[in-house]
Image (tube, rainbow, N blue to C red):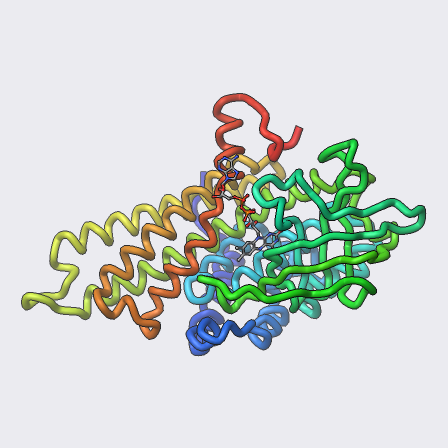
Length: 383
Ligand SMILES: Cc1cc2nc3c(=O)[nH]c(=O)nc-3n(C[C@H](O)[C@H](O)[C@H](O)COP(=O)(O)OP(=O)(O)OC[C@H]3O[C@@H](n4cnc5c(N)ncnc54)[C@H](O)[C@@H]3O)c2cc1C
């Protein structure tokens, strides 16, 4: 067991930290208030290689490992979780899915522009009636011989309007249940594909969350990922890696809030002394630091297992569960430590608290962990 980062990993972490502190921080409050997508910032992250961190260099990526990806996600999320969720979806869900399961032609056509940051991707699984229960897909992809005819609605789609390339999960054969689902690549501009309303959200307000509508969209057969019926497995395998990214995002939100609270506790005085000298504040900080370190260990362990080419379903679920609970607890405490100032935007912690909430969707993570410890199957853990 080696807890030391390599020189390359340290360089990635420092580059992400530098970018977050110097480029993301100055405009983060305004983007959150105005719900403005970080267009220019994402372009720069693409140029720096952060939009395809783990993708092979031959497909325009940076060829880094999953540990480097989590280090970058942590640093970006300490400052701006709206930007980091866009990075996470593009890396973990879209680029990974294309690189792991796409054909060579699909990689050349779709992965290269996404990994090099020229285009942005979106992953479209959720529907108005299919959230946690992702098997209840109502979007249909009817086999018409040389193409699929896609009809339906997807909602909550991150990068919904800013993306150009969408991986859409849809039901082809309802009689086969989850084994009749396909994953299709749909491009913006295809006839019948409309981007709907943007959501007005509690947190990650700079991110771009939309409903998407598909009416008789003709999708060529060569845009299907994997064999016929592979779509649900594709989604579950991709989401397992997505959990590492969101766990690292939660870790970053927690660590960002902790760092602000620690600094504030050394400046703010009450009853004649800095507030960290009151034991109740010092104990809060001790708990926060310990839980953040536990989260980091779980996140790095999941990434290390992925890098070793082993099954990381359990590790990524535990990392996401623990890191997201830590993000929520830590940000609430950080607001508390800031007293009244914690309640205003200028001090950043209220935004981190709102952003932490989205990481807490952990039903599937708990189901996977439960199925493993009980030795039973759940549908989201692949048979
Ligand atoms: C900001 C944002 C961005 C998103 N981005 C994307 C995206 O890019 N792509 C995408 O496909 N989706 C995305 N989602 C959707 C997200 O994955 C779903 O919201 C999530 O899967 C939950 O689905 P639901 O909202 O329908 O809740 P439901 O499934 O209706 O759940 C409601 C509640 O019931 C609980 N629950 C459900 N089933 C069980 C059970 N068996 N046992 C106990 N409790 C249960 C849930 O935990 C939850 O608390 C995003 C959502 C948001 C809010």
